[in-house]
Length: 240
Image (cartoon, rainbow, N blue to C red):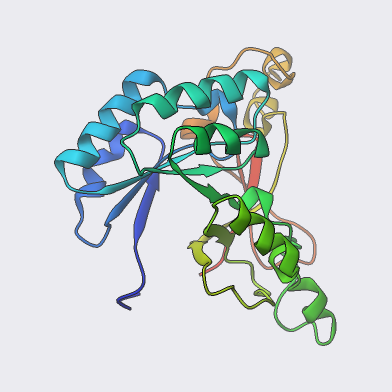
């Protein structure tokens, strides 16, 4: 992607991976978590990444997950550390007003865009493919609502079947590549798969030892050519 209108970003959660962000092809840093509020960065981590971005002249985007009230509180607290004009990807509508109140730039996360995400669907499903390509953005009123709230960028997954909509002139689109988000849960798949099962960790509000940070489980699904990847409380497939 060397088109002049395409901005390349690198997305990470672990501050130890910061050196990779120095690569010239990445002009923007994404930092945070989309799927689990237990992985919301600490103040220390946030401060380190913001300083790194400034020192290396990278633009910065904070990514926030779907949240309980506690997750909203933690995410909102991090907004204080962001330079003016920073982007915040929100995947919970409860974060939107907090972002706007801080005069930051809200970006609609991919978890809030409804589209069929089954990895068994492809572009070769004949007439049915058109229905599978319909998303929230296929409805003009949804784009209008976003723009009325000061949201001019939307994040999408690279779903196999593609999308059927025409972006409004004022709306920018970002594409996550190559891992496509399928679904998520309040319970952690990785902890549930531990031996013996960690029942207190899979329960909502239970403890957490962050097993998902270093663990990915591959699984097969009947009728699907893609392997499903289980990462923490969420599932993905790879589409290159």
